Image (cartoon, rainbow, N blue to C red; front, side):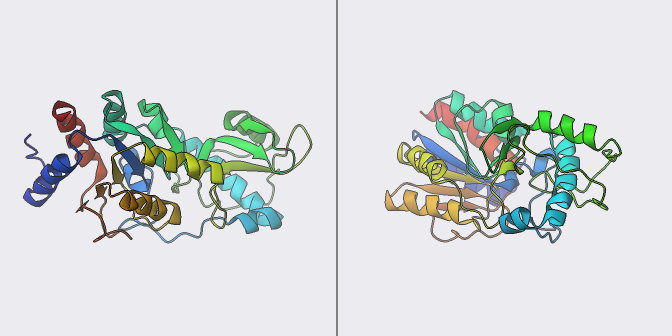
Length: 282
């Protein structure tokens, strides 16, 4: 299939990827690079600003830091929710509908795979859609917490443009007057249902990701540098099973040289080409 809008080297690599994945059931692992074309930045991509993400320890132990986090998280979440799935998300949903992709394992918390139409999605790092109480475990819809937050902090306003972070947060200029939301059931501390730096991915969530890989015959990685250990562990699971592993990512990854093919290119266009070619080769 012609891919003339790509450069010659990438075109040849896409052809090799099609040959490697043809006729196979493919598990997909995605990172922040899949969502950059939706306007959500990558922590580690070329040109990404240096950031100091909130750690779990700081969030739980430092009220001032927790207050700053909630202000930034709310402002970012409002902007975050306006992001729309891009053609890469839609290509993966198409591959699932065509019976090629067994599902998507994502390191992203933006929910864009589900909004694009993917059904089997393992959100390794959680989701910005939910908030839970660290004391009693009660789960809340983020929209309900946002309404409470704005009612308790009527001065807060979303600026016309914010410097959005990959996890839906921004760097607030001030948080001194901010009233932190608490659990309406027990009064405990609320936390967005995302895995902070310094936290472990829940064991049952990683087992779900492993199961998806084990039910597949190949692994496709898109938009991840595999710096996070969960990603590289899944690559190793696939390699032990002698499954072909294909990586599509701009820049280096931790698995370069250890997989069947690495394509140094953006995820959106390459995923689109795979979605167009692979169904006819089943």
